Length: 229
Image 1 (cartoon, rainbow, N blue to C red):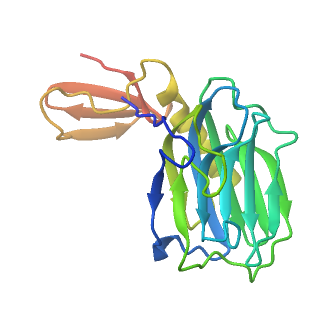
Image 2 (image 1 turned 120 degrees about the horizontal axis):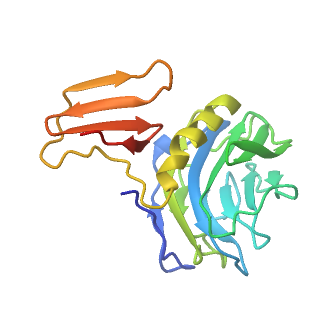
């Protein structure tokens, strides 16, 4: 029930979005995504926002050939002032789903894998923002570089002009992780209607019970825990 997207390739198969002022981040933004991939010979580009220079104001989130998630942020002059190479980070090229979050907050960049902070780097000037009317967004490829995401699959990619806290990132991971178990169900289970009659939360377990005309569904986080008759 959860969709994963793959089949990207360098310069041919990718998603792109022309300039949009909604993505003119100042000095604060975050990217979150679930990634599943295998060993690769080159970089697997997940997200890239750039202008024609390919560096100025640029934002990159990718899986390196080392199998680790990396996050690079360039300043207005095209220098990589935030460059988290993930030396101590866990491998994410093991053909399992992993939750990756990267964010810039002022002059500091941080990356997380599966709810745990794995790298941090600072030094970008607080006047170096990401406002650029020539910038476009690319998903699954990096422009002007041989870095198409040809061995990876992504799901639930989201981009925000805000930065979640460490606690919120862990909560996101815990709530979403059950959706990536084989045969997991994530949607309302009624076969006849989308209408919800009642919702209740168990104060002890935090599980959510949803009642529909012909179905009762109990959610644990964002995945279905059980379907009582």
